[in-house]
Length: 453
Ligand SMILES: [Zn+2]
Image (cartoon, rainbow, N blue to C red):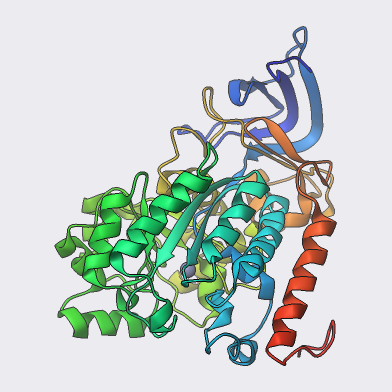
């Protein structure tokens, strides 16, 4: 392999996700250093010093962008609501399902387990929203996992100063929050992991905190929006108008806003979001897992609002294919119309629109010359993809995370032939089991390795 990491990759199909929606079958892609230098049709001859990867039966596409998650919660993935009550006895009654009461080591163990599964699902860029708790160094734990994962992470440091979620003695003041954000950035930020502020959600923060954090954002400011009817009603009662209008009045709604869970926006809010240039993160599986409503996504796309997909927690799974497919199914069902939402639309959300939502579309989200070589190769010989028909619909409606064969980020293969090249799955999994056991034992609710029901 040459020093420039020159690679020539052949595939049965290259789904570029570029503006023209080009698909090359067969196709190829050239990489030098961390960037895509060529993409096109056919099988050109290799140049001197180029490493050739012949994925002759496989499907190459841009790796996925996960626009919303709480990765530390992976420590209790798959738990049902009744568990959150039991585990909620830990640390002053914190609602642990949202990873609120986890400490540094628990956050790192849970988030690492999440990153492992993100990569196996073809995701190389993700956000991670984690809230603070004085003295638990939760954010240090979660960011350490982000740095160790080697993936591209926009870490959303979530602050609260007006909530029962974190006992009041353990909430940071406005100035402490700003100082903590600066400390985290100077300690951990690198070329792949960037740290941005998140005033968690309006019911849990003061206006002063929202505005102070807004001043500190570089690339974006994330925030949980009106995910439930209850939230929407709260805002209308508290302010006399919807939550998004309040953000506008505070002067913090703009093109760097990333609105998580835009479920209950009325028409005026959709209009307002579009006018501001804000983007959104929609988490179909998680929202329904929590019994929340399904928004009509056409309302957002008609106004040109970039909406990416997110796994979020609680979800019960890290399979991004499941989230893509579920998005298609629920939109069709909602609209009572099979034509109303295509698999391609979901794939756009998972790639290019997700990149737009994270303000990274100039670098990732499609396979184009000059963009980063963030690549996903799906096994064309997987039983799910036989016989080879309906390329995009098969990728979205039939493929699963288990069909993800190779994944590269910045031209470096992190998963190759189903094998991890950078993460250590056994270490991550055994550590997460050990940490979870200790946590449950300390709460007096450990019933053995498979004791939970
Ligand atoms: Zn969330």
